[in-house]
Image (cartoon, rainbow, N blue to C red; front, side, top):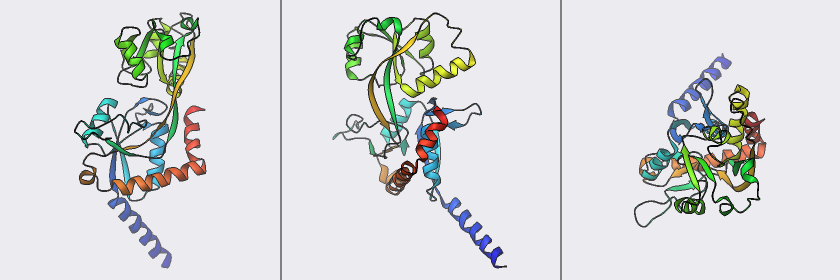
Length: 274
């Protein structure tokens, strides 16, 4: 009889927690495997997504929902205070600022770092006939293909584009840059190292890569930056719209710290890159 009562109480307690859990909505994208993408079953997954799910699963007062939108819209919704949090921005407290004066970061705080991404220049080997180690100035005269809305190339690169010293063709996602390179329609691209390598691997698995048998060899020219990916919280009308923000952000960081110390985050990463 005692066991039955205890089981019933446990069930009621668990149900009560689930019923009362605060539903937290995080804006993200699904176009950058293996970091955030939809698998063959249409389910959102990836390194960042699984890190978030695992951390929040250890926070019984919260339940997470992902809202998949274009990256430009995710930024705008965070900037307007409509989105509670965005995944996975780099640190931009210095230049992602409110329109209204006095200007201040519209994302604050940022979580503990979730994962380190390396941004690289990848070129047709033929474009590397001479050393190109001083980015972006050594790349003048070349044609780049870039993911629309992606700003990882930086302001100095943008200045050379504006001065017509570098040509840029914009496409919808990272995957679309690969055929451009293989068909010699572009010389180089700038991408996050892990997603680009993942796409090449998938295209080779399906045989799609081989159909562009043009003799092009893609080569990593240089690493131009390394950046941490974070969960970033809106700091616009947050107290009014998301009164749980401080509690969630503190508890989330505690769980991320524990996941790192236990090696669990590396386990999640290994599932996608090995």
